[in-house]
Length: 181
Image (cartoon, rainbow, N blue to C red; front, side, top):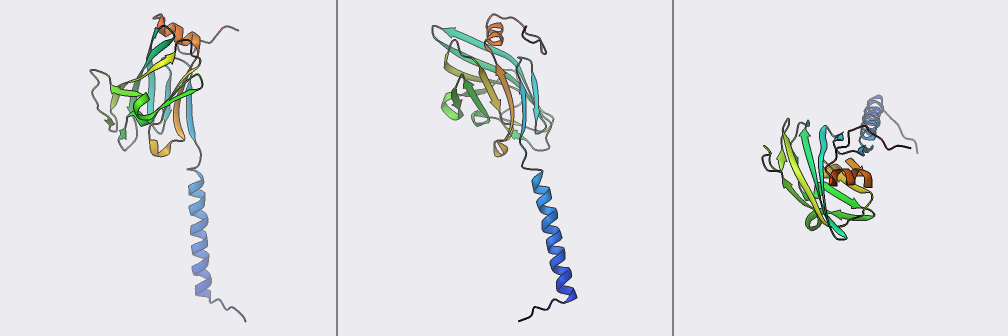
């Protein structure tokens, strides 16, 4: 049995194959994760055109446990609005994970101009609080996902004991300062 291709069929299948190859090359660009990391209070990260800055940290220890409040400033540079709530944040205290509704309380900082939805060009300040964290925890890691649909894109702050201590004592650690070797 022989298969006969007309010139028209050949061109049609070649065009379909070319479109398929071009489409797969476009999808390849979507597979990479975008992660931005900072180790300082005052450090900014930009992911998915959303700039977030950890402006302050409140670490209130009572006995062996503490309540931690992160102050996060968010600027939306995307075309579409972003929703900000409990599910946008993950916090590691040492090796314990705090996430989602119940263990993380996200609220709009008093006086902030925006709400849970930040439109293009808007800014908002959020307070992210966790309780019952060990008082001597290290490291303390805050992860912010600007778009939970694309959870491989993350802004991360990793804070060591020295940074936490400076925040607790009201000290200021300048961005870019490193530990002495």
